[in-house]
Image 1 (cartoon, rainbow, N blue to C red):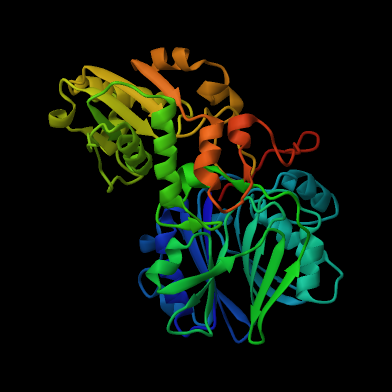
Image 2 (cartoon, rainbow, N blue to C red; image 1 turned 90 degrees about the horizontal axis):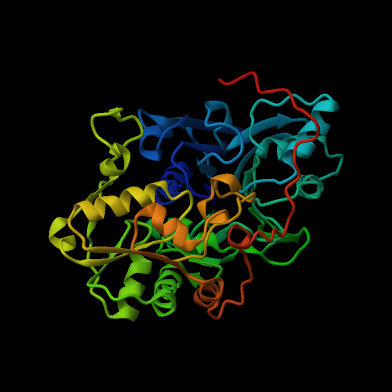
Length: 462
């Protein structure tokens, strides 16, 4: 759950990276960083907080150069701490490198243990640093060969953007779990950009060239583009990107996210029809699927829940005075839409169930006569090891309860999910992409490798 961005050969590389990270803010809100390269020297600005709060007070004066890489972070590996902010940078015997990573390595702890046994010193808790350590220890002759050598040892999900003194590199793991796309500025055709999603291109007036292929290392320098193939395994793009994580105005693996979510809602309406007066989405992630549900069911669509987009992370929450304060701060019902109505509430997914229970009760309190919950994805029964922050299996309500049991817990009149077959019909289209759906099926393309033995607890939290 992170966003990466890179740009090569532009006089305002840092500024455009800032705009690209703005567009990718939904992929991570804990920290942001930009590293630029000028005449062989790397310059970095990295802080906790949102993009707009990090790059202030002359930050861009500290980021000279025509090559840049940026990152927005949401923690899945390592704590939410300043030392884990990316892009990570390192100096080693062959020069300097900066690295931004989206994804999770399934064998990171095993490799870290081996490296520490060999004397390696780590400065962060991030699995990304394992890649830098392996890169620095490689005996291969060129940077690309050293990178291939390092990535030959890691397993898992990684979409990487790297900057050296004179190159920008984009890498996607052999399964292609996480997205990564190549673009080109319209008014500067000599300027290339890479990003997690195409929505980052729209803001800076760049056009998509193509997706970075699974297992590809794309090297961008003053000689042009050069592609090196690591290896290619069975393609397994994360279907949850289309369900929830990506912005609806992005195009991923040649499929428009908006169209996929409309189709999810339409299939859900056909698979789980219900007599109702109004379709209400849980904003913002449920809006597009709810439009599809309303279209297929011919039930009117209304915004019966209004989201407050200005909720910060540092509000003071009363302990007893206002029950369910957290949800009420983010969502507020519209009684004029809900009162006396049979309401279909559409959301993208159901994980723990605690938030959905509060939403159902909120809608009932606003006067709804019936509340029917419809989820535009299958039940989440397994945790993700490839970069989406899902809880452990014991915390996933669908892993141990039937839909009827969950409906009773939620106090909903009914609950239904989109089937796995319906989801695949919605996302396959003409793209031919095959997907990782381990969170819905428990079938993992790559096995998670637990830490070897008993590791000492982390002692440095700064």
